[in-house]
Length: 208
Length: 208
Image 1 (spheres, one colour):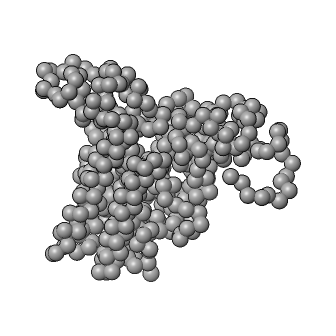
Image 2 (cartoon, rainbow over the protein chains, first blue to last red):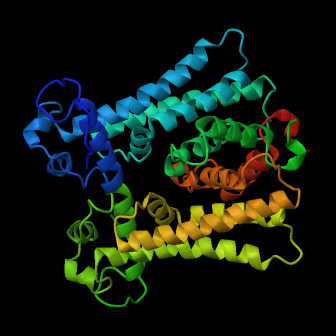
Image 3 (spheres, rainbow over the protein chains, first blue to last red):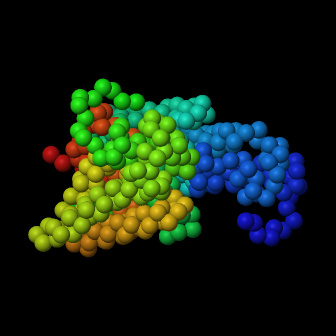
């Protein structure tokens, strides 16, 4: 699984793998095989360590799941929080565009943990808590769309909750196909989403 | 699981459940728990029948998966095929709008099997074959977008493959949140997607 590594930095705990590497490998396995179908034994096998070497860092599979979901949720929450803090001076429309741009950056930089988050179905207390945090985020995004409609920047003939679902549905769909070293940079994708969603695809809407 | 049913129609095979009910229940379980984490024993338990009663209709779990994925893929392929057959008379732009509208209808009418399809990761021959068919569909959609750009209807400053990903990413995101008896009808959602994607969200783009 791993290629030769030049003198690794001193790591906490047993030799071989640190906490971040274990988490990264676990998330990758969860995404490829499904969380329920992956056991701590599978993870130990892929890492080439014993199960106790993993338990030294994470007490359970659910703790690994929680760490990954919190990673994604903390980043997305920070995006929404920053947008509200910029309230003075910026219009809701400006803040919405900024949230779209920053969300794309987070999805690209944290693609594995966001992918896991978007597939959560609520099968455990950890998953239900993550769904609750997602719902909170969805409500903030719908409020921001509603505010942009209220200030006259966005068209008023579509329900803000529906617009918010579709706009961030388009953003979230990135995790399914975006490849970090593929044809499109995060900035290109963020600009394209803003162009499609705000200006529209028909040629009469092209901005100079 | 079931409520009282008025005199059910005569069914093939053992009493209790027909093929469609078994498939429907299996897809629901796969979506809730994950395909790999669901066993034929789990399915038998939920249906309240023995495993042989299921094997009478489906020889394996993989056959259930294949039936569900084919259901989704056949419907989506029909949408794309119909759009190409309407070639005479209709512009690429008109066909693209029609594909978006019909895709929304398919996603709503076949939400469970499309959900399963969109989560396929390629873990088996059946999944790889489904991914291959999805790729074929993605290529047809990107060609249609490119044709609409070439005829001058859509803006030319965005890569057609990227536009196609984003447009159908927005369409596909429906399966994550759409509820059949919720606030929005399929027609409302299809109109909103067309409005957002083609005309844009900014109020200056509102069509009378």
